[in-house]
Image (cartoon, rainbow, N blue to C red):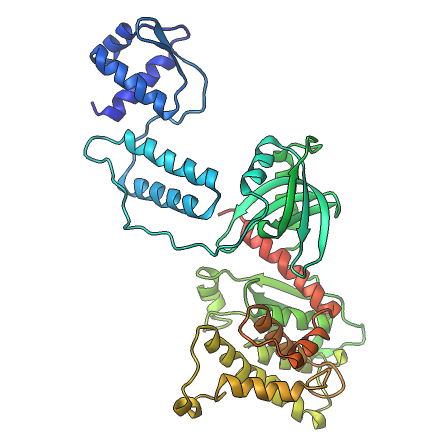
Amino acid sequence: MSRAGRLFELLQLLRGRRRPVSGAELARAAGVSLRTLYRDIAALQAMGAEIGGEPGVGYVLRPGFLLPPLMFSEEEIEALELGAKWVAQRTDDGLSRAAQSAMAKISAVLPQGRSRAPDDALIVGPPWSRAHVAELKLLRRALREERKLAISYADGKGARTKRVVWPVALGFFESARVLVAWCELRGDFRHFRADRIEAAEMLEERPPRRRQTLQKEWRRSMLTESDSVTAYGRVAPSTTKGNSMSKIVFYTNPQSRGMIVHWLLEEIGAPYSIEIEEYGTSIKSPEFLAINPMGKVPAIRHGDKVVTEAAAICAYLADAFPQAGLAPPTAERSAYYRWLFFAAGCVEPAMSNHSVGWDPAADRQRSFGYGSYAAVLDTLAKALAGRRYIAGDAFSAADVYLGSMIGFGMRFGVLEKRPEFEAYWGGLENRPARLRALEQNEKLAARQAWAPA
């Protein structure tokens, strides 16, 4: 019998006894020498088994937190190792040490010949490091002990608030650590990025409901508050007729350019429904490829018409819903068309290439539609100087697209924060329609991130 099998059998023998049993009796039952038994008892204790007693007195297994020895396949061992490496690098010091200790205990009871030395064949990449003022260990403790937290929190715009929250869950994502909690200030569930928690104190007071109950309520709210492909846009005026009354289906992913179209749909005010397409799965399905063979979002279906590409969708919707006033009269559209498609054909590719550290060399610039990153920025800054809107004196779909590009670019550092850009974006970013779309998009992103695997 393998050592792992012998240890497991010894545990089973101890589980079947309510009173202490002598080492000699255990050794006979296990078919081993007394010396081997003593080594096995010590090994089980080192693994976390609450075995009381000592040689010459007898042994008893107390109720405790113990995972009995198991038999693992090669792939199961690799999965455990990779998971332990991820925890060791992506969580806090306490969980990191626990992951390494757990793997050491598992390795100690693997059958002879399968004990594994540290293996670098499977590597966890470096995390997107952000400083955390509030220790994740404290957040985990509040969850474990079901205690309230008093936190100081700074949102994405830097606004600071003090809140008392009831912790529900802690999520570890590639780029963020997120605390789910019921917020007494807002009277609802909220998601708090750990790197924006500037101070945290665990209170003696406990939430009025158990954490398991709160978690069920939170998951129900994730399904009902933001979902689920039912129309939730504002109803268009009753004077709309013909094609504009057809149903709009909006295909998107919260982590995509779909936010541009989402904003425009809220500006229009017509009802629409949302279909979330998941990267790597539904976005490459035959059903969605029939909508967009490129397998990307955003896209819309309006009655029997399908439109893809964000700039084209903006132009189409502005025309399909003239009552929203998002396109100038036909005879006055020269600037509107120019800057809408300048944003799509020049600004976006210039930003995309620049974001990965590549710009066309001087002798290659004529091969690219936008010429150079610097030329695009200079041209755009000159066009926006002293202007509130890009295509005249009224807000238009061109501002939705161009403004989204500028806002995104400055936020993520791929577009210089020139005064002209900041002034232009400052006049757009707080439009009510955009804020509604942004709130809805964040709810969809949270629901997507926390959906069960």
